[in-house]
Image 1 (cartoon, helix red, strand yellow):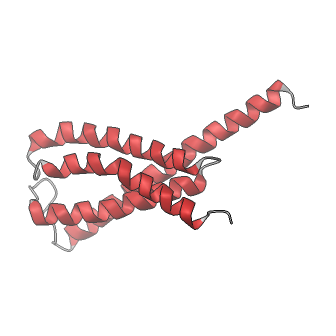
Image 2: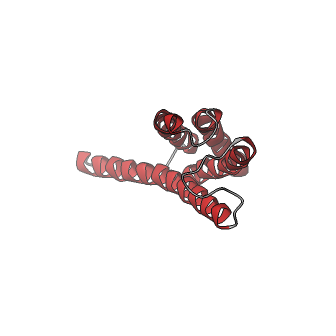
Length: 142
């Protein structure tokens, strides 16, 4: 029979691993996105920081962010201590909340089309779900 303290220690350990899995996915998406942005600014594909960027370039940014977000969902599922899909969806919820907050703050700054930050918020959950689904399909038993 396991003691209540052992059970509580296992739950606490899993809680930290769960948080770490979601944080790892979030940081991966953020870092890959920012590095790609910086490279495209250095290559003069994007205008200098702080200047508006419109439709075509915003579509380019959205496209690689979608790929990175799917990868982040996959990574979160991979690091999850249990129930990988639930962890990937938790990342999607976090991404949606951060996306909505970013849209609220950046739309008034007129740095690009309004659809761009809104689409980041809208795509976060389905992209993370897809990353979790890809992980589950790749690691299905049987």
